[in-house]
Image 1: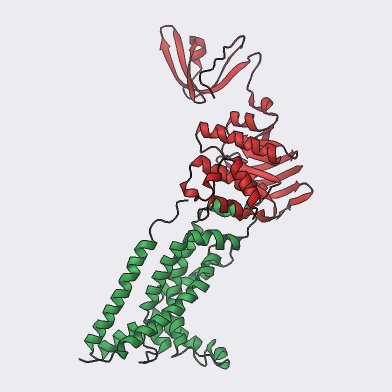
Image 2: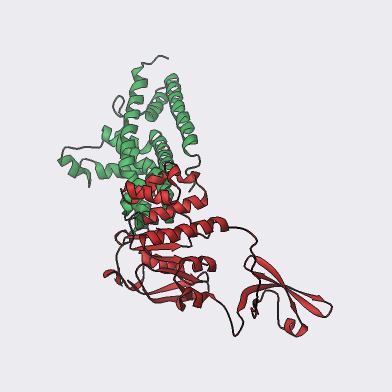
Length: 225
Length: 287
């Protein structure tokens, strides 16, 4: 069986591009979200926690469908965006959103507990030194838990890389446009191109293995307090 | 001058209790806060720092820190707090720990050299010994030239030698900067050396308040040589009894007659006293 190299590198590049955007979103939104959720006195904490955890416990394909309804051209939220000329469905943006939503709980939850478990007296030492909660978070807590941040980011990105359900619904699995590497394997198998599927699998294996090795180093004991 | 009037319901070891403290503290004084664990000492200290909520009124040099439930956040109180577990910032060097509070390199270096820590300025806290860490913590607390220095059993995790050394340092810092200081402590010798006033708390209330001698010297009647201890054992030898008593870190033997031994039980808190006509004081180790 013969296949063209574009069938390999296109999904690969698409997936890496998606992962890059997801990583930026996770750092920019996931880290502050974990900080907010680690507050003890936040109102409706259970609700926001449940919302973040939702993609972990609810089947991805069903989430994809609900998002499709919400973000579609005539959807509840999508109609506002489409008025601004922004569409998510069958677009690269849809892939990023799918990966982000799937990865968010795996980023936020471990970070939230790392922040909550951070020694109270060190935080209080910073407060009594005149520093705000946010300043303390950025200059004390975050540098101390940076290994946990990187580990959580890696696990979350691994989840985003393997994301199929939401991606399928939002991206539409359009070959050459929205077929990420995981979907490309499905397509290859569907078309009987087992060699292509195997090659894509081995690429994923190399990526996963590197993530695994990286995790091993980052999950080692953090600062002794 | 600091006026403290705080009320808070606490969950102590004996169930609910009310912390209800009224104190006036002179500027530049050194007050020791003592009492059994669970008596509310640490909570009072944390309320003063703004780390815990309470009802009442705290006024420091005409600045209102607490009025009813309205509290000034800890960031705005201008205090120094020394924690029992040091609480140094692990990601920063010793010097940066100090500079984090205030960008004043001259003061930081002065404090570090007073505590003989200048050599360690660029080391991370994890590489320091307990005594060194607590000195850094003390220096850090002094960095924003606090109006009030609060110390929560700062020396309790250190060995006696280190404790002694740090007591000297705390004293010299207090003399240099004249900071009003409140320290939670259990150690009578520490309180004697450092403080000018001892406040004894029990079940959330002030039960004794006065100068060090009047609170700490436990003399009764005409006895002038008196120690509190725990009865560890009573051994009968022929017609007499020998009581083994632990006083602080020491164990002593005292001879009792049968009538004295009768109502004593192992585990009792006891007082050993004698009229101190001519006790012999001998040096056994040089300082």
